[in-house]
Length: 269
Ligand code: ADP
Ligand code: MG
Image (cartoon, rainbow, N blue to C red):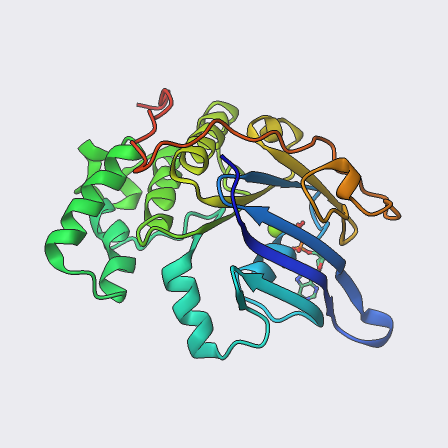
C-alpha cells in the first residue's frame, strides 16, 4: 500500500561552475515519493540523476530549493543532523557497490548498525535476516572480492537496509550488471519496497529497468516531470520537455511485519 510522503523536494536546483562555464545540472525539480512506492528516475547519462539523488540524500547542497524527509527539512540541516538522518533514515545503494573490501559480507552489513550502537545480539539477528533476504546467507563470511557482481550488489542492498531506513536511494544500481542480474536486482528492490513499505527512488539510464516501477519520472537536461499528487489531475500543466510516463498504481498491501521477499533466481551461482 502506498502511504505517506517520505521524501519531497520543491524548486530544487543545482548549478556547477559560474559564468560561461556554468552547468545547470538540475533545474527547479519538484517531486515526492511515498512509503511503499518505487519511483524510477530515468534519463540519459548527464541528465542530472546523480545530482538529484545526492541532493535528496543530503549528500550535496542545492543552489536553491528545499528537500524534506518526512517532516524534517534536509536543506538547512546542520552537518551533524544530516549525518544522523543519513545513518538512521536513509539507505543508499551505489552503482559501484561501495563495499569495504577487508570486511566479510556479514561485517559489511553489520557496520552501519555498529555505527548506531545497535547491541550485538540484535546485530547478529538483523544481519542474518538481511543476508537471507538478498540470498547471501551462505556467503556471510566471504569478502566482496570473492563474490560475483550481482552478489556484491545484493550485499549493497542488504547493507542499505541495515538500519531499517524509510527511504532507499539507488543510483544506477544495475549499471555494472548484465541484463539478467539487472532484472533480478530491480525485482528484489521492488519486493523490498512493497513488502517493507520503504519509499525508493532508483535511477537508471536503461529504459528496460523501469518495468517494476510504480511511477516513472523522466529527466532530461536537469529537468524532471512536474507532479504534485498521485493522480494526473493533480499534476501541474507540464511545461517541461519531460513527461510522467506511467501513473502510480498502488502496490498490493504490504503485510506487516514484512516477511522476507523471495529472492529472484540468481543465475551467476
Ligand atoms: P547523470 O547522473 O544523469 O549522469 P549527473 O547528475 O552526474 O548526471 O550530471 C548532470 C550534469 O552536471 C552533467 O552535465 C555533469 O557534467 C554535470 N556535473 C555533475 N557533477 C559536476 C561537478 N562536480 N562539477 C561540474 N559539473 C558537474
Ligand atoms: Mg549518475
